[in-house]
Image (tube, rainbow, N blue to C red):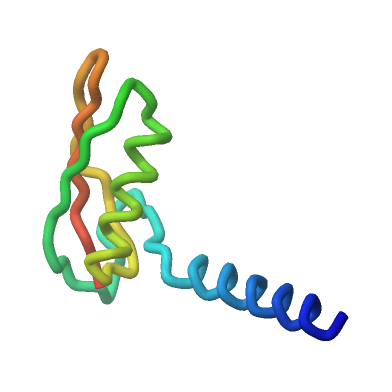
Length: 85
């Protein structure tokens, strides 16, 4: 029983730490933050999937926030986001 409790606690802590590392999408350049680069991603035909991929790339790059600056495509979407820290 103690092992199950410890395992559940470890999973809860791991999940909480991943959510705190995620970058936040913003609509305009955040005050007090500096642009640190640009990332791009491709996706099928879902804007949500494209947003998720850009968010993941922003988080991997160490950005605290990102702003999608372009998205286009018909059956295959392409997007670009500016990163801030």
